Image 1: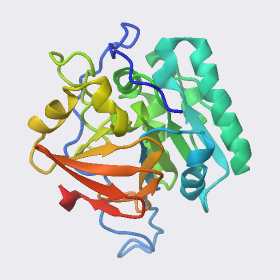
Image 2: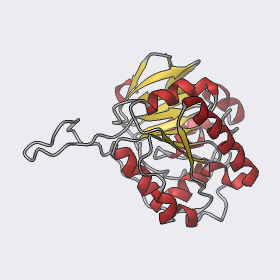
Image 3: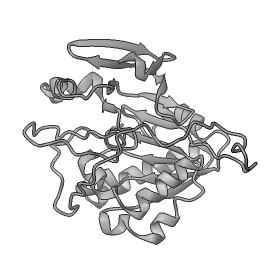
Image 4: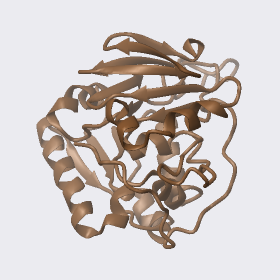
Length: 281
């Protein structure tokens, strides 16, 4: 039960940070484990990545979340930040769902209640990210999420943990925010937000099996001005793409529906078990 797409307008409580994201793939380096050439030091590789169409913290996505945590610390860090504009009741709803999923997985829930940029820049909250097995950005308002976290201590801690091997996932708003293109869903005249920029060569439409019914003009917007080398993906509900290597370049489809590679007027479906790569676009 991921969030429904709201009429996205970033609240004034999160002043935009217009810092441009990187235009490269995630900084994972070419060396994929073992020791660094010449100095014998261990090389830590980044953790898995997952982008989810809907269903975070629900039984339908339990296997995906278990896969992301496999072999990692049993600490499940959960950020409901994208739901902060909806109020405390909504935040509690997401944390309650997260607690139930943590129980199903047999791991410890670490709720990270970041409501605004002031809390996102808290050293105390950022310290809770260290040692996570899985860090999850759940649904709500993707523009608010990106503008709240970008350039803060909490986001820096998330990236550092991921680069040290923690898994990182985003569902719905969380999936969109991890890319470099966050559209104003119902305001086509507004410039897209640059997002958190972790996956700058991706554009993502979660809830894809329902999204175009909610926002019919979104598909032309997401494909028309995509820069060369950009992969545009539609991810159906209760479906995820997972990259266990952490490079953000090759993804496997998991879940009950499909992922779609979108280019112009074409849509190429990829069922569960299929592999989607940058070259697929």
